[in-house]
Length: 375
Image (cartoon, rainbow, N blue to C red; front, side, top):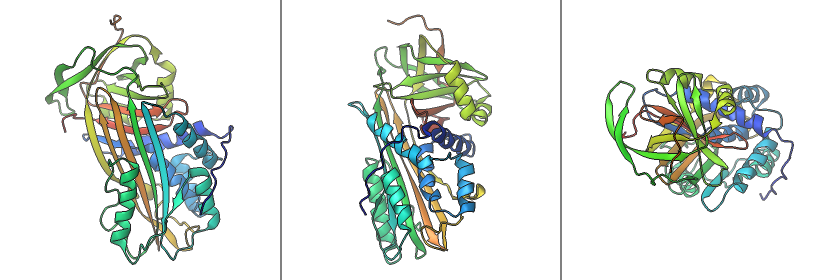
């Protein structure tokens, strides 16, 4: 089914959609073990659930609306945001979002739902023999995700995700590669210690910047800075809680706090020290979605007796002196049944939080925490 992409609605509530996705992401971050490195994509999870919401019955749709704070016109907003992200790419920035629907060969999802996902999400359709060849179907979907994420998410769907009752799988894949606006390296790395949550120290090498002048500041129990990527369309916000305040700051992190940071951080010289790190995370989202009424739910636009019985998410990030390479994917399974004098030092020498954001819309593409950069 070839569906032409819908034109962008200039009045679509992009900011409200981004804020809703972000809030759900902060909620999910608070659910993660406090002592572990974590990375995931609020926008990938949000987009996948927005697509699923369009197939849901009224009660399930209302639960998804509440969990993700979806505004009226969410599909129009995603269409505008998706195309904003595509337009923001450049020589040093790559951002790709890909969506695909994988129905069982004999399934007949509602045509209006399929057309909506094609027009507003660019979702393609590829029928598979989910019941007759679950292993081959899983391999095909994982191969597609692997391709879309440049090999960073090779096995999104685990063994057993597809079985004889699976009628449809929905996937969203996100790939992000960006160079820093000002690469690290001019002043060389410095050796130091990173203090873990338990108070133990580990020797690490910190990347160092002495000539940054973007937005930075202090808040209640933390210091932070926004590090721009090339082209200034994207940035990484690093928040370093004070010693003993990591859990408190993480628990308070929400859209209101993010808005306050945006309103109070100011530009000016600061010194930055941050370790390089790599994190890979696999999440089973089903329990989290069940607690919020989105699973098992009811999704009659897929088929009359369809429920959400599988939800997984994978993400990978690598941050070094040159920039960031990150990818994430979400799978939903449906079954019948010369430096100036720095005014501030932002030293990520203790557990810290980070958000990769599209600056114009405010949507958080990746959220994470680093509690031990050597892990």
